[in-house]
Image (cartoon, rainbow, N blue to C red):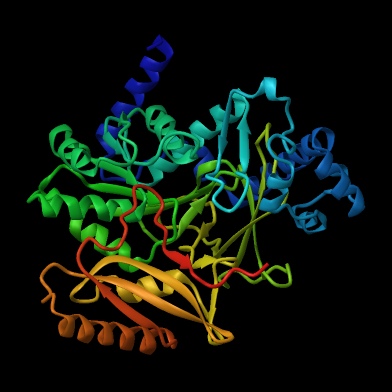
Amino acid sequence: MTPVLQSRYARLHHRASKTRGARFYFERAAETMSREALAKLQLRRLRASLKNAWQHVPLHRQRMKAARVKPEDVRSLEDVVRLPFTVKTDLRDHYPFGLFARPRTQLVRVHASSGTTGKPTVVGYTAKDLETWTRIMARTLACGGMRPGDLVHNALGYGLFTGGLGFHYGIERLGATVVPVSGGMTERQVVLLQDFGARVLCATPSYALNIAEVAERDGVDLRKSKLEVALCGAEPWSEAMRREIQVRLGVRAYDNYGLSEIMGPGVAVECEAQDGMHAWEDHFLLEILDPETGQAVPDGQAGELVITTLTKEALPMIRYRTRDITSIERKRCSCGRTHARIRRLTGRSDDMLIIRGVNVYPSQVESVLIGLPDIAPHYQLVVERQGVQDALKVEVEAAPSVDASPSAYARLGEKVQHQIKSMIGITTRVVVKQPGEVPRSQGKAVRVRDERPKTR
């Protein structure tokens, strides 16, 4: 370690010793700047980012020309509405490097999505981008309860997925110790959590529950371990699932949000108030729009999150349509941070199911299922076709204590079906499976299976 890094770590550890359990900022000036100063910074960075996109990305230049707007025409943040949207298919249509604003030889890292719905979306980073991302991640982790000197069990996937490495470098920058476990081999993870004494767990919500389940099966009570904090994200999860994680692991679980196209993890995170995720507005310009009309909705009203990057070199994104549904709160938070908060994601505009005329998000069903007596927190939603309409089958898993007779499972299924009907207003077919039958997640959970006939 260089003398500079040693000095930085020493300062962070000294500060953490005085602030563990108290208010703590990684970049106090940036996190608490006035809204007026933040807006000025955003405009300056927005104009620079647009200039970068205009000069180096043919698609952005062509679309801005078609919209009759140049970077210098953007004189206020309100002018962002004049700019064209960018969508995920743009990255796939220009696969692999067509949206990069820097030659491939100037990139130091490339990540990509899994490509389960076609070609993967490829994202790239310059050395400056990685430095920016690492600093934002350290800020994010500190906001979410991590402190210098902590031992951190990182169970997020490493590799092309941005989650594992994004957290890894942020943990190190914060001055904590990372255990780079990645996903899988859950029994070994339980052993390491006990033996190493991690204070913080980083995982998807579904995998955090998987760890809890394996520990309980093996007679290990992780509530008696040194775990205090779980930083969960990378998939939608409900407040009910948060409570389940907190109770079964004995932690405070914090939500965080990110997406590879924008940067990776670190776009937004909850603070100790657990009252919405602070979005780092000095790096990202946020809009909440009606997904149908593309028009802005009032603060507090749900809509689609649209993000413009302000500081990325290699892959500047202009008004990127995330398809994630949330709302925004701009009032100052009790933690002292001034950056706007986005609420827990209720789903994606492209994941919404229409079941017999009723709009349903998977997270709504989850909020009903999690915590129901005699039901384990594992499920899948199966979309089927009945005649000309779509129907929903809900596969749930009985708790080990439930009588495994067909009649007992049938009664339990009827109770679950009634609860979904009364809470959401849709009729579903509920199939109760035995313990362990619902597939477990090693990373992002697959919550929806589409079994409708494919049309040509």
